[in-house]
Length: 343
Image (cartoon, rainbow, N blue to C red; front, side):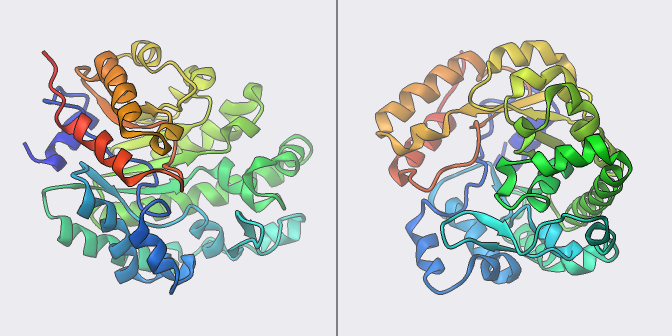
């Protein structure tokens, strides 16, 4: 069984010899070869130049036998394609070039031609599919409408959704218009990725915790479900939301195939709760990757003892890998998972 087959079987909730492993946001800042590229190229250059995006995507694969590669890109390519560019702030983090504050600004967003505007991602994925062949799975991704809208309406990134909440409460028609636009753009984008050779896609609702829990179904999950309904039925869709445990009953309505569990939630309990309808992935704490390899091995083995023989389980971190992760700890993690065998 090759790595791609193992990944696809696990997505179908079938038993495999060991859980497949991939790492969210696995390309990038913790690898010296990535930092060297960043000495020459801006982040947007790496994202928008297919050959460079391929190179960055493959960097972790050249070091570690991961079962899936995730396309090097960013969730904010969608707002940019709609007409709201993004940049990296001098003090760190990502900001939009301007903040959506008025109905006129929202009306000026252009949802037509998403596939053409983001063709550089499709070109990178076609190159990656040829490079990876059948040995390794390839993932695409997109931000959820709620998370994208949180960035687009906030001067401080997705950590503050005050303006978006105010819009949803006081101007529900305008809120629905923005979310519908984002849902259609995301569906077009994910369909483009499906046509370009990805084996699965992930929706990142990273700003889920900024959405009031009593509105989470209508303000966030509703729109992710709408996206799923526009995608091929055979394409596995992974949904990630922070504080997964608090939202699990609502997330089950998102039409996801696999629920990605954050590090603060009880993964075995969630696996039992969701039943055979869903796969799950997660949820090693990302911070452990900056610690000694021995600590990584210990925590990974504990998680494998709980989850490793369960059909439909994919090993992952509880969120993206951090810039201070140690390559030797990543090596220890991959070796632990790929050499693990259940009795």
